Image 1 (cartoon, rainbow, N blue to C red):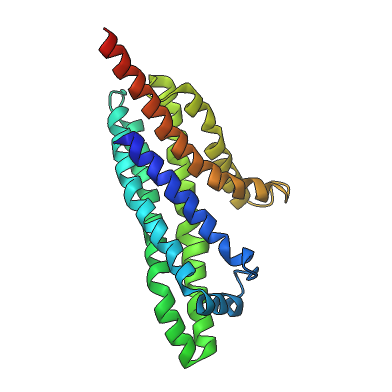
Image 2 (image 1 turned 180 degrees about the vertical axis):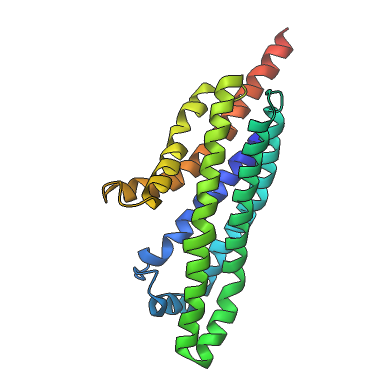
Length: 228
């Protein structure tokens, strides 16, 4: 269950990221401009809602992945690293779930409010943008990266996760460091912002690598048991 759910969560996450890039790629470049945002929702409401739906599904599958991976690493003593890592992953799922729900439910009411008065619609868009894109979404991605780093470190110590996957944990670690140092002030060069953004799909790809690695190990263990 851990392997399959991790792969599905990663695939859904990458699909969400691709949909999130649709707005600037379709010519609506300044996603923080409420006028541009309302126009995008008006012309492409299905894309706006689909980003929420995919992220909602990802969050639900992530809950299964986090719980299942915690079971694999449950033999670690003391128990608190496993508990803390699992809690971090669950909080990540909650944040992503909230953002997904906001996107799914926002397009209809937002367009209705904009139909009453355009500046009201722009204000409603800003609420979703600030609370979602600038709030729970980055929090969820940061927590997801912390979970990935925790799983990688414990997997390396226990041998419960393939070493290659643990080594790839450096990608979510880059996201964690970049976000924490970046939020502390202008301590990093401006170009590092691009690396932090790229580490988002990198973290989602790590989830897929985790699932594939666990599947390969399971297949190998089954083969050895059959041969014994």
